[in-house]
Image 1 (cartoon, rainbow, N blue to C red):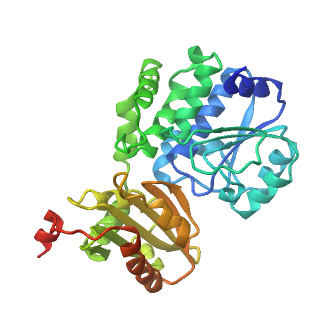
Image 2 (tube, rainbow, N blue to C red):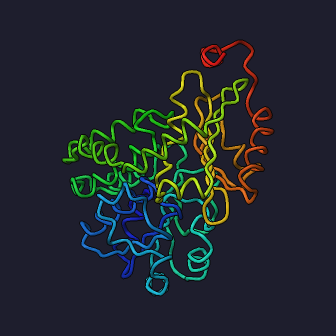
Length: 345
């Protein structure tokens, strides 16, 4: 029995299924959760999604209202977790990614757990682990589950739309090296199943508020610092600056990728002050510029080679200075002037 048939058997045998995903929700964690939920329902079973916190506002069009949040309804989430006989752990490789409250719950409950994830170095807490670091996204792995469990005929627009979104967002609109021929084969299956890809792109891209665009404009024009010797860009945003532009969760998403659109840039680091700490997003280009090691070794973070996250308990100025000092250690100095440096001078 292949591992996906084994997972289907566990779904069929379970009487109480809970789907979890990591804290600080993104398109892949939300998309894979909703796609799996709708697939389980197509199998004639019921499930509930419990997440640590709310999705960014620009994902609300997916109808995330069915997702129960630990930071809003802790008693309800606790009840579901305690009653579960099967818990899915989507898009995270360690229980700490849930945040302390849900982490404690997950570690305490005595039931079967299934991890489906594509990040490096998975912990060994699950009963069944699907860990494929070559996959573009967890959403793609949910499609592998649907197909290789023998139920590709169940794939439809309702299941496929959030999964398409998950792949779209986790590949940077299909630009990252994680996109492989198999990724496009899976995308073809989604389009065949009725997913309206143009609508997904429109709702994702054309969904900004005025305040979000003004914040991003301010960040690029006033807060972007470029270390020209290394072609690395850094943006820092204080809590006061976020408040000035009526920040809501998700407003800084995409800023690092925007910095990378500057010709010659190899890496971008964006951090902002939230909940008393600096939340950091790391992005880079190419196999010669991995950035996850920088996040892991210095900012209690990690992720993929070209996309990672981390945090700093230092203030804004000290975090910025620490990054300035670390960049030469992790990125090679440009031997010749690049178009980026020539324009600046």
